[in-house]
Length: 218
Image 1 (tube, rainbow, N blue to C red):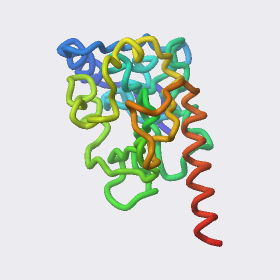
Image 2 (tube, helix red, strand yellow):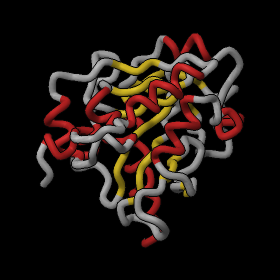
Image 3 (cartoon, rainbow, N blue to C red):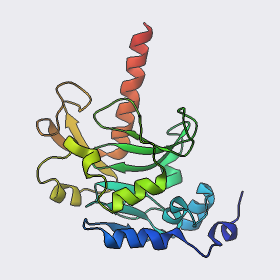
């Protein structure tokens, strides 16, 4: 394992670039202050602060991008208590969860769970039970999220006047929809909308997939 000194020894910290992207954005982006536990977090993540992932882990408590719609996990903060290593503990084999969104979508780096390049980002959309390959890396996802490049990506997953609702949503919660968006009847504009802990939304999809696979095997 690399030491803290090795992980932070760089003349080109990526946090400077991240701050530049956030400052240039026309959308509301909040870089949360790092947690007192940031050293332990970075030691668990084991990437240098020259990388965007390492910079977020060490220099921030997390990032709330696009009015808080996309939440990048960092070292933890009162507005986003989940840390990168804590959120990944016993949760996803072969995937490294790094961000999620207000409607219960999850972004993860491929760690061998899927074919294709390791480190590329995959997305688990709230309206799909299958993971989708985005063919971009973490840095590209960060750049697009901070500079307004995800508007077309979300398309009909956003409803009219969503910004005030999302701005008041805690980073550890997301919207839930019933009927579920992955069903034929589920639609963002017509499904009942409530809020649940992000962990509950994630576990629900995991359990749903498990039940469907068991049914297919019968």
